[in-house]
Image 1 (cartoon, rainbow, N blue to C red):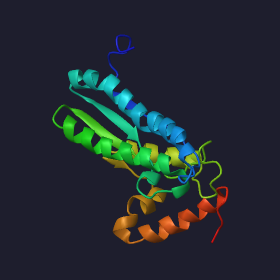
Image 2: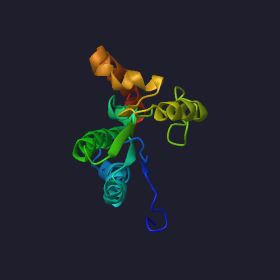
Image 3: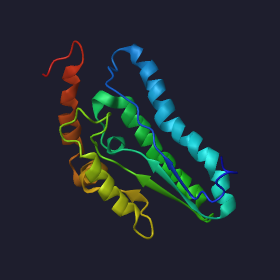
Image 4: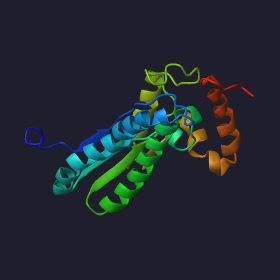
Length: 184
């Protein structure tokens, strides 16, 4: 593919699979493996496929896609949160390792967006509104290290703002939807 597109200078890694899991049930491991393989290892595979090309060009941008849930977990989707936290940490390390090569790393950090994965969330941001705001942020020069639409700030900065424990407790209420659990 690179032979057909030698001018390629932007790579976007985007994967998002996940669902509700009961961590009390060891059967969740298969779902965890699938989620980590797609969301985190899929990101690594794409980055590895294109990094040598971008370094050889001496310029380019890698855009990874993590999630606000990687900073402020939704306990019902533990593996999804862990996979996106891993993408964040990997993005930070990749940025440090590519320093001086001409290749930039930007991390897109979406909140819940009304896609098939976020469609059941009444607080999900409309897809068109998300795209418009995110593209505006991506167009800035220089490209920000983290692309944070306004509605993801509460996720990204919850620890700093002192709201982390309260928000995780609120999000933990969704655990009552698991079999054998109650809202108590």
